[in-house]
Length: 196
Image (spheres, rainbow, N blue to C red):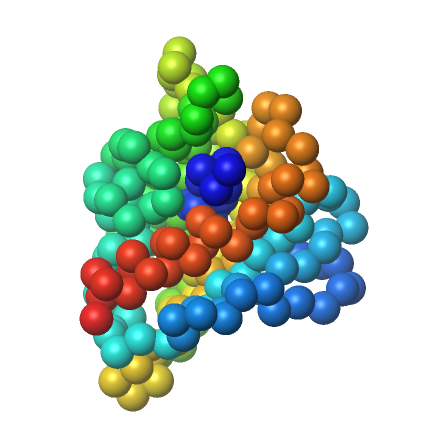
């Protein structure tokens, strides 16, 4: 069952305007995962946080490396950089493996980075489905949005990743919500290994 949550591993959620508070769902290995109901969706948003001994630039380069993204994202089987319009504007494709009889998914991800302060960087994420032709073997995920926030604190880096999306197809929202912490937990464990 945990493979179903692969659809959220990369989903890079809205400003999340719902008034409900974040609820801590998992706190393990110095990784905290929160969820929150969204007024306009049956699917919850998630927010993940951890602090690691690393640098802002190192983590930024890993997050924006489309050709290697599949190596640390949960159940991802392929990824590639489609376009780099500038140092701050990336377009990435990624494919996700779901078990039979479910159809594998793919996503086209727009990533735009912006330096907030000398020690903080935000990378906004949203679906860009029309920017790359649909692939016959995959069901395209057409809605997701979120961000990465990287904050340098001395020799430590606080990493926040917030997402909301819809995996498309027939997966029930209750099931997605019940398993929503698995993919981000896996991703942050893998990211921690790469950056420390």
